[in-house]
Structure formats: C-alpha cells, structure tokens
Image (cartoon, rainbow, N blue to C red; front, top):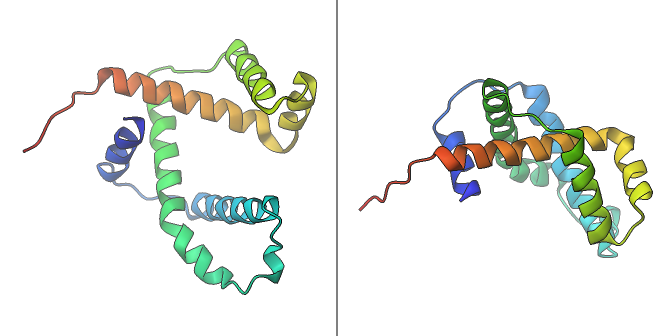
Length: 142
C-alpha cells in the first residue's frame, strides 16, 4: 500500500527536479549495483558491461526516488513530522539485532558517511507515508 501511495504522489505532482540530486541518486543506484555484484563474488570491472547503458536504465528510477523523497520531505515539514533520538536508537538496535553485530559497531558505521542522516530520513519517510496512508481515501475503479 505504501508503494502504491508513493507512486500515486509521484505521478500526480509535477515539479522541476534539481539535476544535481538526480545525478547523486543515479550514482548511488549504480554504486549499490556494483556493491551487490561484489557481494556475490563478481568483479564488476571484469564484466563486459555498458555502464552508460546501466546509467540510462537507472535514470528513470533515480528521478522517481528524488521526486518521492522531495514530496515526503515537503509533507513532513508541513505536518511537523520529525524523528526523535529514541526512534533512531530503536532503529539502530533493530539493525544490530538483524545483522548480529554489536550495537556500538553499527552506530560507528552509521556515524560515518552520513549514515545517521540517511537513517533519520528513512524513518521520517516511513512516518510520513504512515501519516498519509492513515488519511488516504481508497477508491475502487471499475
């Protein structure tokens, strides 16, 4: 339901996206793909891959990612939806339990490379989608 709601918001809100944000998201998506390949024991540099084509394939989803993020950011600001330190701590504890890693190690990793900011954004986006879902009117068509 959340994905459908976000998809509807993206499709029904037209606005100009900052190209720098789209480019950054595109880089993140390609880097994630490279990391996933490496985790599977595949050296991405040894693959005969057209990375330009990969970027083209990821472009549309990068645009949707940025658009959805900006919409959720706007709604969360308008509705004063924020994330508490307790919510961040709870999520870090959850990650530590799921990955079977020490809590302090998880916190240390998240403290680097804007990980805590990304985690806070993920929590805020989830809370905002929950807020919107609670207020959404569902219509059956057909």
